[in-house]
Amino acid sequence: MKQFIKILFLFVTCSTFAQPRLKTFKPGEIWPDNNGVHINAHGGGFLYYNETYYWFGEHKISGELGNRAMVGIHAYSSKDLYNWKDEGIVLKMHEDTISMFQKGCTLERPKVVYNKKNKKFVMWFHHELKGQSYQSALAGIAVSDYVTGPFKYITSFRLHPNSLPTNFSTEQLENAELVDNVKDEKNKQKIIGGAYFKRDYEMGQMSRDMTIFVDEDDTAYHITASEENQTLLISKLSDDYLSLTKEFIRIFPGGRNEAPAIFKKGNHYFMFTSDLTGWKPNPARLAVSKSIMGEWEFVGNPCRGDREEKNNTFWSQSTFVIPVYGKKDAFIFAADRWRPENPIDGSYVWLPIKFKNNLPFLEWKDSWNLSIFKK
Ligand code: DGJ
Image 1 (cartoon, rainbow, N blue to C red):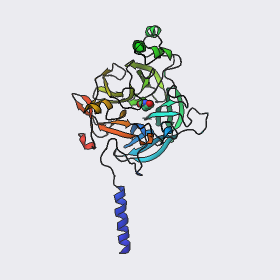
Image 2: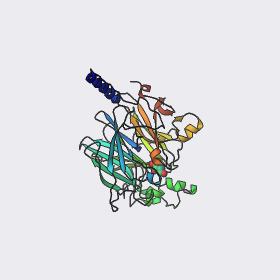
Image 3: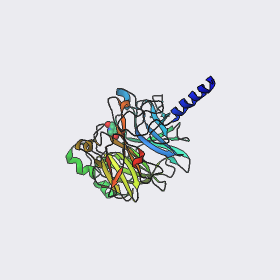
């Protein structure tokens, strides 16, 4: 009898622990992983692979150094999007002091894509060399054979040296006038005309806040804040996702957009971006286009709510749009609530994307779950 009770106790305890613990999203709150530790994956990117969601993000540490890459990129996995299992550091910083990838450099906004042809997981990220603040403005790549790594750092580079986007002519390049101060309003027209594009033409264009979007036909695109964060560049990736092709466009020149996050619904591509205010929140923006390499148009602030909520995007900045698998037209706006003074405390603001007249909008929810989406 004693033995029976013991087994029954064990069974009840195990099955209780096996139950998923979380059943709702609570935007902005502490989000415990399977070990009860707040998820540490900031500026995240998401991949759905083998019926599992993977979350890759910047591992932050506490204190002043926290915004530098002292550890690497952290991954988590989940079957239901609420409960996340810690998969550890999948890309580790190099210990030596010669590597471009040494501890203390800056790594932001990692995005992982799976290449079906070569069966590789390819991670793209924003990389700033140690001690150079945000001036290097490089795109970096790491690769792995397994979704949970280890990823191997491959290279970092400026984009498209000596190349012109398809929507910018040789004549425009010749006519562009250089400027020396991005903050001087008088320079705005020159920046729109390609001042920084021309400055960086030979050495390659800057790449800061970025994302990767994979289209339905498996073509992937790199979208990044370039030209001193004044202009976005969209570049088509090579078939193996390991480099950029020569095909790229320049959009919203002089528009000052950061934090791009793209998704597609029906025949339209939508892009959330933010304004340019460092770690401080600002009003989000929504752009739409019928073609990813085509004409993009801004359609306003996607946030609904009171003035403060709209002006601060619910105190967050976009990082990714997560398609919910198995549900039609179900997308989650995933954003960061940064805490630059103690970055490890940064939290995550996830909100369901709603639609009115085929345009996405966002509303605050203290707590919500996936039943908000229709089947
Ligand atoms: C805002 C960006 O979106 C972040 O990724 C980071 O680069 C900060 N700016 C740095 O100030």
